[in-house]
Image (cartoon, rainbow over all chains, first blue to last red; front, side):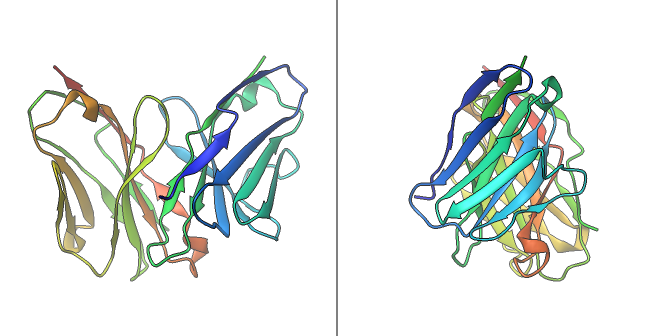
Length: 116
Length: 117
């Protein structure tokens, strides 16, 4: 149980294009999902908290117009990197919090974005 | 402010050795949760354990064991008889309850464990 999927796993795009990443909780409902960014050899940096049916809460320094988040259902959140540039190249990981007594976050396999 | 420190950036051991990964945390909350996650080369974070601040019992799961000591604000992770498959980056993380900051996870910098045959 508690499986989270992400799609795509890897994407290469040209500078200026937009990229959408999907995060799905496969066997549980997640009213809250989180989006992280991880650079090589570094820790995870929380970008935003996504709540089903409401606007995402962005961390300080994260451009909400650049990183659009939509949490349309209890099992799906999407992150769209708009007008991507090479500096947006990174590993993006989502997590979904299981609404149970454990409140544990389960992570997706990540999406490696390369912007040329 | 909340903070997690994993002072060991990299550890290298030979198979079958025991290894302990250190984690020290800072928080002003009386209720909080501590986690360990494993990130193998594939990149996916694998949940290992969750502990709440009121449960200081040590836990053992197979070759893994965790030592939680509130007095020293530490939550250390020991792998007994390490195996090559244990090679990964291990993250310690801290969170407050959902009603406090939405239960955001604060991660340490991670410890890269390399187990050589």
